[in-house]
Every structure is written in C-alpha cells, then in structure tokens.
Image (cartoon, rainbow, N blue to C red):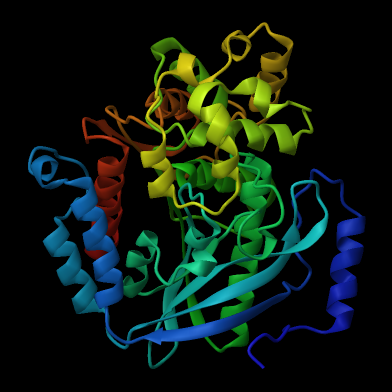
Length: 421
C-alpha cells in the first residue's frame, strides 16, 4: 500500500482529546503527529529542478538587472546551477504528505503538501526548511501536485524541506482557500513541519539543528505568519536560524489603501482571492457580485474555481485600475460593506501586532519597483521590527517588478546557503 497512516488509534484518540481541550483560536501541536507519505520519487539527476529555475529566469528577464544591483549573498544564475550540480550527490527524494491539522475554523482535518529530502548514504541532514509557497490559482499548481517548486532549489545543500498546500488546495480542494488568513496559513505550515520531523525520525534520519523559514509573495506573508505563531506559541519547540521573508502582503489594509490611492494593481486576479479570503474566513456575508464590476465581475468566479492557471488569469485581465475592478461603494472605507472587509483585514494585520524574540534573525526583502505586492508592506514591516531586539536585515532596492524580484530573492537566498556549504 502506498498510503499508510503511521500511528495507532490510541495516538489518534490522544490528538482528538488534545484538540477538544484547546480554544478554537489556539494552534495545536499534535501529541504524536499523524501523517502518511505517498508517491515517493527519487530524482537522481538535477535537470528537472534546474529547468524550473531556468524557466523562471527566462520569464523574469533578470539579465539586465543582475549586474546593476548589490545585495547580500547574491550569486548569478550560472553560479547557482553549478552549485546545484556540485551538491546534487545521490539526488533528492520527494513525495506527497497528508497530515492532521486544523481547518480555518479549528476543526480537525487532513491537509496535504510536499516533502523533499536530500539523499545521503548515512541519512544525515543539516536540518529542516519550512518553505511557504507563493500565490497559485489552479489546484494543479499547489505543491502536492507539482514535482518541483522553486524553493526546493535549497534542498541539495543538505536539507529536508516541507511545503504545505494550505487549506483549500490538495486534499482540501473542496474547501474555501482562506487567502492571507495568517492563523490558518501558519497552522498549516507548522503542523506540516511537525509531521515532517516525525517522518524523518520514523525513517531513521539524523537531522541537525538548523531550521529555516522561507517564502516569497503570499509565501512571504506566510513566512512572517509562521514566525509570529512560532514566537507566540512554539518558541520552546522551534528555533529558526533565519527567516527569509520576500515581498509579502503583511498588511491587507495597507495593500488596499495603496491600490485605491494609486488606482492600480499589477495582479487583478488576487483581488477576488483577498476579498473572498476575508469573507469566508470571518463569515462577513459579502456578495462578491456587489464588490466587483466590469470584467472582474464577469470573471471572478473563474479565479476562485481553482481550475485555471495563474499565468492564464494574469493574462485574462486587462483592467488594472481599481476604479474598473471595484464597485464605487467598495472604494469607500465608510461604506458598511467595505468596513466589514477592513475589520477582517485588521484581524490579519502582521505589522506591529507582535514582537519577535530578541536576536531573532529576519531577512526582509522587497523590490521598491514591485508591481503586484505594494512595497509599503515591507516598508511598514521594517519600521515595526526595528528596535524590537531582533536581528533585522532589510534588503530593499530597485530589483525590478514582482516576478523579477522573485528571481533575485531566490538567487540571494540560494547564495546564502551556498556560502555556508
């Protein structure tokens, strides 16, 4: 059998008892993580991963940027590909993991994601990386349905990596995706980490103490959410050597304000995802037919269907002006409909709502030219984190648009790991 639950009925009952003793808002570490891993593949050659990265580089057209910027740790695409080949060794194993966690409303459910493990003869690993994926639209694009994700480029340097699908994708595709709900997202990723840790233990791996937390775009917001939840609830169980936070929408309200003020968004498809994420997470009762106008009104259900790829939806929408996307009432913060949305957004505020541990190592990256996630998100986060006692490295500059910024972010983070190797 490919899918085998790893633990006994007694363990299941212990977990259910633990859930019943907690408040709905409290994150829970299972007494014994319950998981199953299936469809395990050994990737002996690095070409599939290198091809994914090369496609990103070609799409983002970063050659004109890479020679003009000076940011920490950065290496060139050629240097990164060479480093992958040099460190590939016996290859990488990857598989789909289902694990017990919670849904948006605190109910026990089984989520899914993808795991990666560097193959070594002695089964020794440097540590574990929690990777948080960027915005996807089609269910086919979530980690459990993709053999390689760009972040997995870090695995050959000696690590295990886990990537949650998040609620609403993979095994929970029939559920609403609580887009940018920080608690739901963090819970999914942290529970995936505990399940991954148990998997490695059960399979005889010797895992070092290094722990990293990384993500870009929605993944950047998820990475900051994970760091917040670990700080507030799991500081005795997880210590990150560093969190790499790339271009995340850490403040939904600031993002809304920026889009309205500038009458522009470079990612129209994210607008229904944001509104629907807050609407379904907090049962706001908003009618999205009244929120959107024009081509967005006619097509927002396509975005939420999880049947269309991100590239297709990026190309579908021609209107980027807020005044052509949102109904006039939704442009007014004093409108009752908009007020509900803003109140929900404030419940998900990551800026200034928590304090990292003294000495927490945070790498905060954002291109000031970002056309999809307004730079104000990281600017505000950078101010909020200063003087908190954390070790903050702000990497802000003119690194191109959002997709170009992603390539630069990956090259910088990869360079960090390559230099440690």
